[in-house]
Image (tube, rainbow, N blue to C red; front, top):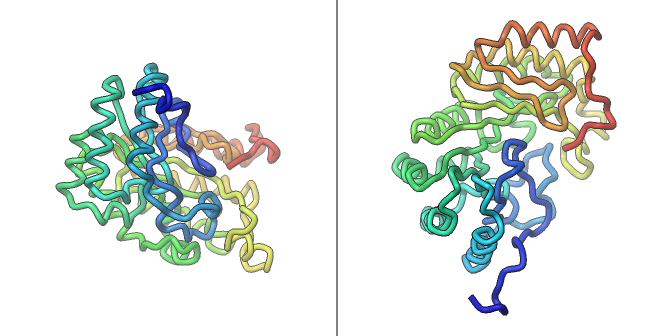
Length: 298
């Protein structure tokens, strides 16, 4: 590679997000935006039109990582649902990572139910074989009415089935759920149904975030019209309690360590269920400090 073509940094377009657990990963933006981009609560990718980036751009990004990121052991593929890329592109990308970044031990990406459904069982197994080690799967809720209200694009059974297929392929499954997304009207029903969905899906990890309304999104507009009420701090804690109480995981990790959460929780279920429920009860009783509103963030 001559000096004129020497990469000077990663090619990032617009806002880029990654899970908390990928904080020290090499971030490669293989797609722009989200192929669904209709979720009522999400404003992350409203500034982007979905596209798969040119292969030449990814080649330069991998070359930059090979030179400057030799201490990072993980790669995270962005944007919102990068799994949607065709198998041919995924096979090429994972092959390049294995060849050019041989020290990398795990590759992860975001996925939605549509993206998983578009891959056959054999293709998912092939992705695992090539190094895709974890998928972050946005579920948000297990309640059918809530999923319809936020235009998630999937019913509970489809979410369960596609999550189970990821697990069957041997890929670690990290599920995101959203406290408060049912509003005050469906608060505890949403929490209970979500716990029951998690029990059927059996993810390896669950990350609970807390709703923060984003101006310009349909949910924020519904709030301004008085059609959606956000549960208060106590309501969010009660949802967290209800969700954990109904999540019968087989050794799965349940986290609420996102910047949006009022109370950080880290529990192995079912082992830590009683201890975690007792902690939430202490918080509801005002005996455990909570994150102040000004410290919360998306």
